[in-house]
Image (cartoon, rainbow, N blue to C red; front, side):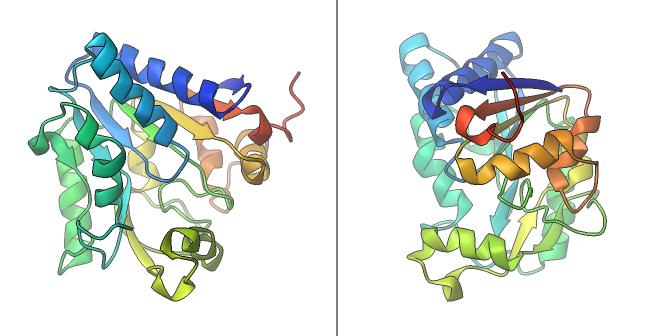
Length: 245
């Protein structure tokens, strides 16, 4: 595991974008796993800038998002489908047919999970997976649990996760979905390379447990210790518990 501590969020975003851009230049048909939430937005802004300024080409890239809320349609401003188009896809030249996001309105969520898993496998698996991390250590919507979920699954959201995400729903907890579709830890760990992004001091404990703690499903991100090629890109305020110089 490589740990990179940056001075601030902007440096983290730029360095992460440069890593992603390098992968696309080397492999134009990169299969890219993507995360939502506030943390990767800066990286998405930088990647869009690189396309405009440096002619970075996304036309052969395929993307698979980690998760989606159950019950929210694509046009719902709080859906991750809407988020990705608003913050990234509408600003780059990725092809519509190469974008994959779980369908939160699928009539059979379990069948949708199986279908999504099959799509990932048909694409040859994820080349580069971008991750964020929740305050309780979740990645995607793989919440603290008694075991690591192997594949894309229907996830029950923890109360603290829903409370954290309520800020995106005008602070109204009752509007926050209770379930989500999420790529599982087994599928994430099959990614050829992983970059995890973290900033804000509220993530410091989760980062410490992910890097220094025991590998345990109660700290989902801790399993990344076992991945052969993971980079932790951490803004300094989220690294304060690590005791690094």
